[in-house]
Length: 194
Image: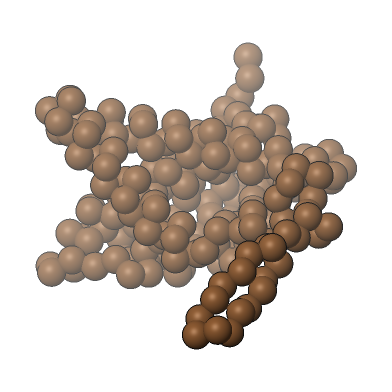
């Protein structure tokens, strides 16, 4: 119980909500993160990794790719572990990719992938016409310059996709490309096990 006093008026507030808490002591609503906070976090994370890695490796974009993709990979694995624990196992690879396009994308971006294409030989193309992390992105020149500067921001979601698929038993290589912001295309190639 906390008491506040102002000009002889006293207001009492009860700050103990222990009866509505979950087993681990956190209220379920406290587990959510603001969407704008996540957007800003991603921008700052990519910028920081680009700056620190550039200083360490003399501007090596492969090192930046590796760090961002590895972080995304770990996040993708954890997301899938959390959101598939109560689901039945997936029957085939197409079902796994559909899960990524519908369920995981909705969890991350509040929308489904706009287009899914496959050649039925282990290659899937996911197209997001309004990729959320590109919505507020632009440069003075625009066009190809914007797409080039946006590339580090797709390496993290490439890792998320690859980590999610690996956690579901589908080893892949994920490549992203963008030519016209905010559109983004992710190409997933299934790696054959030997």
